[in-house]
Length: 187
Image 1 (tube, rainbow, N blue to C red):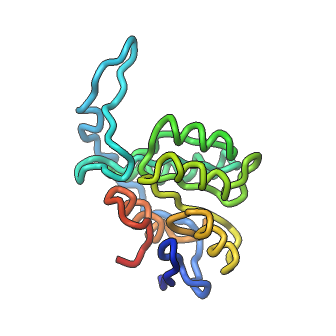
Image 2 (cartoon, one colour):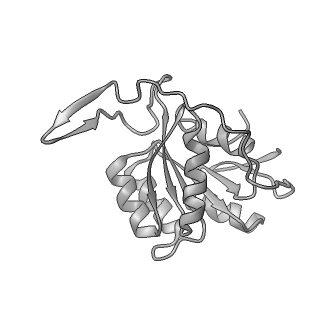
């Protein structure tokens, strides 16, 4: 995959051709000590949380998925949950919901469909980045074109990926959210 640079990060070049969001065959899910640093608050138990982007090397990357299509959210969740180093912490169906849930859960990475209803994806991205600057926002789209990449970068997205990309291209971009680097694929 080739990437081009701009002021807001590294985005896939317009000549990139990506096909079918596919994963490798399912592997057995590894159950680690994800909840090992828990502290009690009131009646419930809530994980202790560092600032977004400051996840320690052994901690899974906390991912929030925002897409208007419930089927795609479920599909992406199933794929990401097969990865022992990724933890899907929530989902959102529209722009207002993704902003609210992101502020509440403070994920490391937010996957935002460019075609959100209500508050659009660009405004939602700006609002998330304003309050959670360490959180990486990755815009997703079925639409390919330099205009979409530029708009995503202009509004603060850290990366832009086509929904039709191979999962092998998705995963490294998401994983870079842990290290607080630009969520891009060219390091």
